[in-house]
Amino acid sequence: MTAAALYIEDGRFDRTVFATHFNAMNREDLTLDVAESVEAGLRVLRARMPDIIFLDNRVPPHEDYEESLAELTNAGFVGPVVLITGLPTLEMQDAVDGAGPVCALLDKRGLSATRLTEVITPLLARLPNG
Image (cartoon, helix red, strand yellow):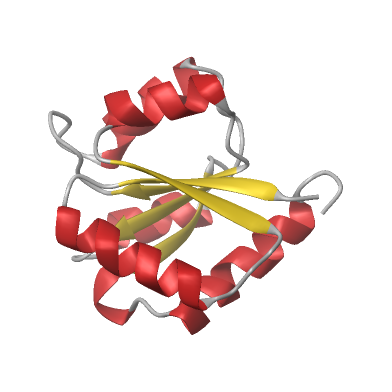
């Protein structure tokens, strides 16, 4: 089975860096769609429901990921969410440790293909047919 990932990030540079690391993983079991806004992410979601969402902490017009996440879950997304930020906080880590959909926190400053693999591999194993 090929799973689908969606990365929602408003920064063009950060989208490029993420896609570069994602492609460097050379995974045949996971595809990537990239959206520059939550609205664009919702269009992708409606066309093809992703299995995993990578979500930037702050995608305008939202002040934080909770607002963005609410829109995504209201649109029917129920899978795991990996929160990505350049400034991780204890509050964000608490969200990962809780029972909600945020299952991992990635720091943009330490992003690499290796780090992505460490996060993605167990997530894919948890998916149906994973």
